[in-house]
Amino acid sequence: MILQTLALPILAGLLGLVFGSLVVHLAEASLAKRPLSTPRCPFCGSGLVPIQWSATFSLLTGQARCRECQRFLRVPRLLGELFLAVTWGLAVAKGGAQWRTLLVMATLIPQAMILVTDLEVKLVPNLIMLPALAAMLVIGALAGPALPSLTGWTWWQSLAGAAIGFAVFRILVWIGVAVFGPGALGEGDITLATYVGAVVGFPLVVESLVFAFALGGLGAFLVIVTRRGKMGTAIPYGPFIILGCALTQLWGVEILGWWVG
Image (tube, rainbow, N blue to C red):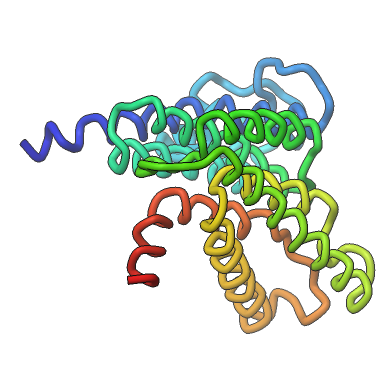
């Protein structure tokens, strides 16, 4: 019985792992503004063998280094694949086999892509975010936020969530530039926060932003205490926004119920 219960989430996780390798390549292609082609080493440009197309599978098989330049795989690629695998598995375990679970899984794809690009070069490409945001605004108005356990919704929840995400990060960017100068937070973070607001809707956008701020503060603290940076060190904020969103999508309704109750 337990195996039957776990079979579908495990299958979804494996599918997320395989699909994640394609998502990572799409993210890097959009970043470089080049057509999607056979994966190549990002350092020397030499072709990769099929098992190396997936950062996870190449690591598990001991082939995580380029055969030509011997450089190790980029860790953000691995994290992007694992993020999609874990969140897809958890989404299916939470929501089961239904169309809303598929919506949740679809909204996690742009998040995995941005996780890779922001960790690699601290960029949130509009080529990824603007189409994803436009699609989510329409879908959110028609079908509600992308939450696996959602039972009731109104047409304006996603739109209100997007507006709050935009407003909060617009203000934070103004403050960041005024206090720390350009680069503290970027315009891409505003677009990402707007997308996240549309994904989780109102009122869960507040919870998602709280998660993002808490995780971002913890990340900054760890950078300082491990002596890998100082107060003015720029760190990508996109991954914290994404983790806050994923946590809210998976457990935000229950957390809000505990808090209110």
